[in-house]
Every structure is written in C-alpha cells, then in structure tokens.
Amino acid sequence: MALLHRPQSTVVRNVSRGTPTSWPGLAMAAGGALAAWGIHQLIPAVPMLTASVVLGIAVAHLPGSRAFVRGAARPGLSLAGRRLMRVGIVLLGLGLGLDQVLRLGWATVAMVVGVVAATFFGTVWLGRRLGLPRDQPLLIATGYSICGASAIGAVSEVSGSDEEDVAASVALVTLCGTLAIAVLPLLQGPLGLSDLAFGRWVGAGVHDVGQVVATAQTAGPVALGEAVLVKLMRVALLAPLVAAVAFSVRARRRGVRTASGRRPAPVPLFVAGFLAAAAVRATGVLPDVALEWAHTAQEALLAAALFGLGSAVHLPSLARTGGRAAVLGLGAWVVVAGASYAGVMLTV
Image (cartoon, rainbow, N blue to C red; front, side, top):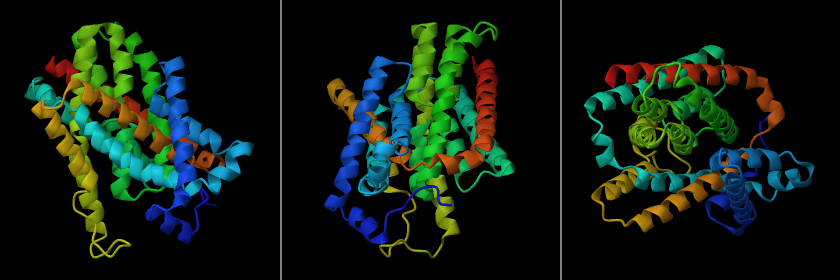
C-alpha cells in the first residue's frame, strides 16, 4: 500500500508550472509554520521545526482536515516541501561564520570531520542491516551527522527521496535531538566534562542548531559559545556531503535525463547558493539586522517546508517499519554521542 496519496500527473504538472492549484496547500503550509512558531513561543523547549513536522502529521490524520490535505491542498504542500526547502537551505548559509569556525584550529576541524564520517557511514551501515526501506538510512544518517532537518531536506533534494521517507526521518532525528536537551546536561558531571568540553561535545553531537543552543546554555556562556562554533563547523560539511550524494546519484543514473530533457546537474543550484551565502557572510558586508531577517526567513521557510513533508506521512504504513527506525535512531544517537565524546577528549 502506498504511504501517501499522490496527486494525478496533470496536477503535478500544474504545480511545477506554479498554477493557482498550489495556493491552497501553500497557504496551509504558511499557517502551519505560524502555528509552529506559536508553540515554540509557548514552550521554548519544543523546536519550531519539530513542531512543524508534528502539526503536518496531525492535520493529515484528523478527520476534519484529512480530505483537504490529501486533495486540494496536496499540490501546494508538496511544492512547499521541495521549493521552500531549497530557499531555506540557501539562507542557512548566511548563518555560517567560516572565519569563526576556522579559529577553533585544525585539531577540532579534524575531530568534527571524523565524528561526521563515523556517524554517517555507521548509521547507513546499520540501517541497511536492519532492512529499512528506500532512502531512510541515508536520510537518517545525514540528519544525525550534520544538522537535523535541514540536512535531510538538502540530501533528499538530490537523492529524489519519497516525501514519507523524508518526513519520517525528520521526525525521528528531531525527537532524539529534543531528548538530548534533557539528557546531555545530566551527563556533564558524571563524564567529568568542563564547560568548554561540554560545549564542544554538544556542538559535535546534537543535531539541530536550536537544540544545540538549548542544551549548551545549561552550562553557561563558555559552553554555549563553543557549542555554536563546533555546530557551525558541522553545518559547513553540508555542502560537500550533498555534492557527494549528488555525484553518487548522477553516477548511478548516468545517461538518464530529467523530465525536462536535461541531465542532472553535478552540483545542485541550491548547494551553490548555500556556499555563496556563506561566502557573503564571511565578508562581513551584511549588517546584523539583515542577518537577523535572513534567519527569521530561513526558519519560516523551513517550517513551512517541513509542515508540507509532515502532511505526507501515512502513520499506519509508517508503523510497519517504526520499530526498526527507532532502533536505528537509538544506535545512531549512541554513535554520534560516543564519537563526539572521544573526539573532544582527544582535542581539548
């Protein structure tokens, strides 16, 4: 049984051309993003992006909204999950201070690269062993190793992953990242971590930037500053990872053209935009107010995109692989936490 109800091919073509059929779903995604922002304001421990996914899943299963989500709103919600995600990822580059990242030193850079590699390849291997379907191991590995939902969205764009795989992976990664906010501060004392070491551990091992901030701030400003810098270093690895996945997909589909008749680009345009935005940020030409507005826009776009992805989830079908996905999530959490702890102990 299909995991979601797909629109007719004629509707899909209309959406790709930006016809009015997409507006009901886009308006619903915007409303979902606004509701997620309200939840985050009321309960700061709940990240806005996590709330967006949950709300999207909820509206797709409530009797009063289910028919609308699967019918008139589906084209726009699918469009939000693709196009808005790309723009949000480009804006994510404006939050990446490359000059600040490099100040941490090459030992820390090597540590972060090692943690990302161990988490990514270890999670993909375990996911294949568990028999998870389609691209779920790849997406979950990306979310754990780089930056949660944003990284999953970026990789899904070049891997051509199904919407339900993306939404399920986002839900799992954000759940574990949210749990880290409560669990990791309790381990600082037993593990003998200074505030500086704790901050780097959090930055190297927690998924979403907001979750990193929420976790590290419990140990004070030193921990928070170190955590954010290490986290930005992980975000910097998003572009090469996406480019590598794109190259792998292109190699597998060599000779295959897209629906428009063109070969897939070796490096997706939104990845180039991400790198360009990071380069602009490094020049220092943008005022703080512009960066703040860009961050707000990024959060809003990603929230709307994740609402659209969440609305594609069909829970009865997802439950068939839920147990294996949970095992993979726990295993990946152990890998990233253990690898980042070992790396911090070797470099601090």
